[in-house]
Length: 217
Ligand SMILES: [Fe+2]
Ligand SMILES: [Fe+2]
Image 1 (tube, rainbow, N blue to C red):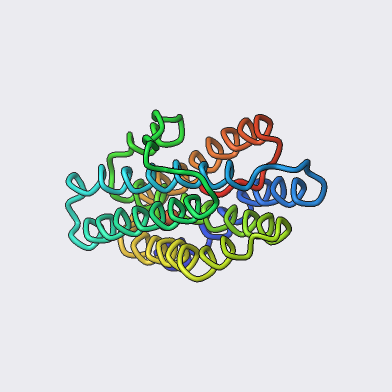
Image 2 (cartoon, rainbow, N blue to C red):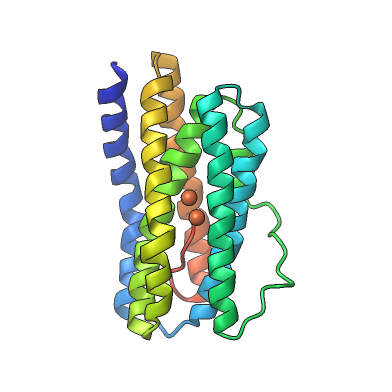
């Protein structure tokens, strides 16, 4: 398949697979118990640093220079998101100075194990960033209900535009590099796998904290 229609088809496939994750957040929003916003922001901290580390880990072993640069820039952007969230937590009375990056979870373990450039683009920029964008929207609606408009503003003005740009960069890079049937099949399998692992992990976490509106991927 030509790469542009392939990416469009993969985009549709991803949207379809993401729907249950988005729905879970909306269901929590509609009838969930009271959950502490600071706890949600600590999940965001863990996610932002994990995505930053992932992009940084992939960078040296990704030969294509435009993808290498994309990963380096992404690592910096996600570190910036970490700082924004940490600052917001500070204003809410939670000191993040002692925060330590979380132990590897199955999602990041799987992603770190991807060795080809197309799989990395498909799993990281193309899929993980779409999950992040979608669940952050639910998280912002949660914050809105809690009356935390400052957190909403930070996401709306800084974090979400970056997550969207990462995702769009993923689309462009996939269109450039997923040029053969084998590469396209690998990309599709990676998209499916990332969403599957993320959905399972999010469902477990939601049961633990009592809401599926938490941010990150
Ligand atoms: Fe981020
Ligand atoms: Fe991102």
